[in-house]
Length: 390
Image (cartoon, rainbow, N blue to C red):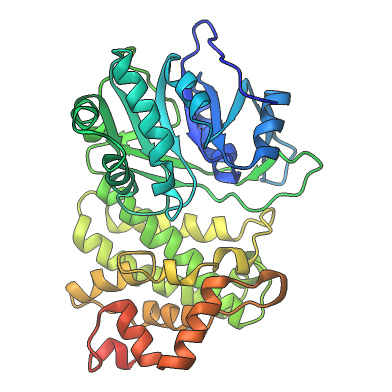
């Protein structure tokens, strides 16, 4: 079923690129509950057609009780359908968000460039783009891709009228079984924090309940990435080595829980050294406890193979494993447990239905080049570096 224009009285429109679990269960749900008509843009025609046919979907809050939030009205468009994208651009569009994964983000340059081009031609005012990805400065990556799609005049319009807001997003959205392909399950907790300095003032200037703004986003981004994502990844890799099936199984093991907790205290020491007094030691201790409690949610059946997938991406410099280690190195802080987490990641190689292409690539490189060369390439450390030798 194709997309049809939807101008609803009193309802601004948001376009959410990515109609996967995060898009539907987190960002799209928050925008809908804040009063937007959400238009999802995705390449999966089954999802696009289902959203257009039903105009709604259910979010199941996984807290041990029957709690369902119905998200409506919604519609969808194929993200490669530039004619439909152009139609949306002419509607009362207030915000563009993404949840597609960092590697896919540059592919959105064409459809978003079409929105920018159309708005310029129609003389329309400012709008904000927020890339909700697990990558520091993801929105900057999207802006760079957009610049190559636009001409000089369009770039000037973009500079004056498009806000590229960086953000931190935090919600665990595991795979969820349902007869309805649109239904999604989520943990109760969520946090969406956006840099207020990078937002453009729009007309009307819409306040989005559920989206917190701050003038110190760097602290939020790194606290989340180097606590939640660091802990999640290390739990998955240690769980894989110990033949655990789920994150719950892994974190319920006393040995793994102790190791993950110690790793989070190491990353926490670096975070506090960098960002104090933005948050205090006591506040960060509570944050770590909250993270570990979320991993222990008995209603989340999140497989270690899913959380640990794409290990080469997670081993990039500045990401959840090497990022906190680098912060510790810069400040001469202890990091042995974080390094243990990196070592576990290097051994990740699920097989069968959980086989992971990046894990296979990493293991092939280790066999061909040797572990020392691979780690040196990933980290940028010299061969005689003390952390590399560990």
